Image 1 (cartoon, rainbow, N blue to C red):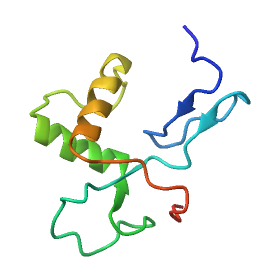
Image 2 (image 1 turned 180 degrees about the vertical axis):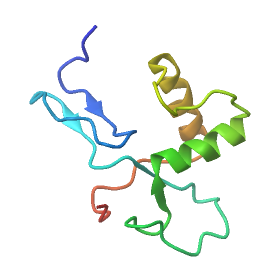
Image 3 (image 1 turned 180 degrees about the horizontal axis):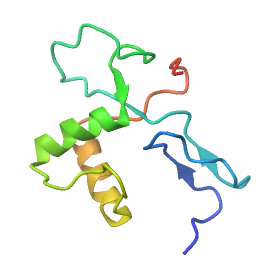
Length: 103
C-alpha cells in the first residue's frame, strides 16, 4: 500500500524520514506544539522554540493522558500511529508552524 500523491508525512522519529518522494510533502521536524491549556511551561526544550517539544516527549505525555501501556521505543507498531495521532489532536497538541525555528 502506497501513500497517495500529495500526502503530508509528519516526522515522528529521529533520524527524520528520508524525503524520497517528490509528489509528497514532508514535515520539518519531529516535534509538536503543546496545547494552549498546558500550564507551567517556562522554558525551551533544547533547540525548540517555546511551547514546542520533541515528538517523543509529547508522546510520553499523550500516553500518560490516555493510559496507554504500549510505547514507541524500538520497532514502531504502525497500526497504532493514527490512534496516538488522534489522541494528540484531541488533547490539543498541534504540528509546529512553518515559521517556528526548529533545528
